[in-house]
Length: 161
Image (cartoon, rainbow, N blue to C red; front, side, top):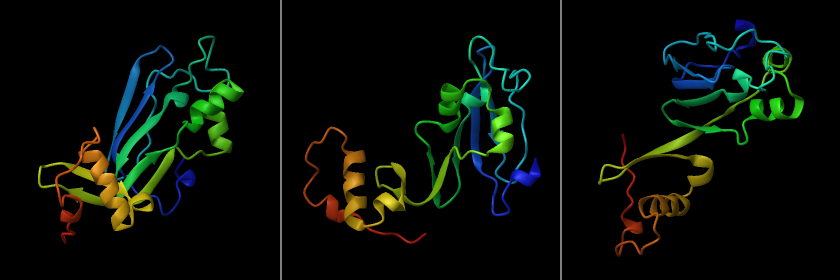
């Protein structure tokens, strides 16, 4: 329903994935140029009773992996649709018509390209200060916790681009 899409919403690059009632995996590629509806294939009739005896609701398994330049995707944990199905039973279809749910957040981010070819997109709310950015990069580039080479932390430079 186009009326449920906020005016400020924009298209995203990425993928939606779910598990259908029969247990088969489904997915849909998101179009970075337009917002479009898609059907959760094989979901069967979507209603509060559609989950059936196996308790499977395709909407409960819906997940997004998406991106947009300058932002990073942070899915909610635990996933809200799965939590509501677990707590209330049935299927989310009619509940979503009455009460939309956010599956996650797009957060402002900084992209870091390392000389070794590594690439990271880090949220500014957690890495907005230089010290925090350096600490996060040190952890990601050296997950075993070995001592970084002398001066490595100070070698971080901001490049325009």
